[in-house]
Length: 96
Image (cartoon, rainbow, N blue to C red):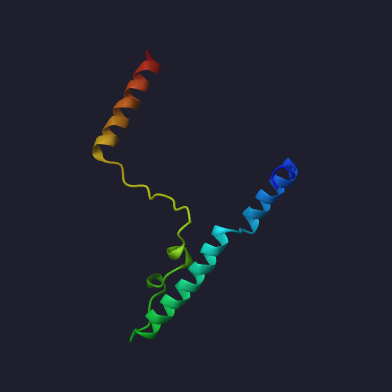
């Protein structure tokens, strides 16, 4: 199929996939929606008090193929000190 597909057609399919995912991404989303709905329903049914929204699951919690952004951690004192020294050295070179 790729031998018969033009570059323009290939780019069209890539653009379409960005708007309307198919394949593993779509299946992962569908499974995540179902799993999240089931878990949330069980959580609500077994709780004596109302469940806060932040305690409920989201479909993304069950999506295996979802690319997750790494959370930025706070810079350590050592890394702050190194960047401070590097900045001082750069400023010293530019003023010389």
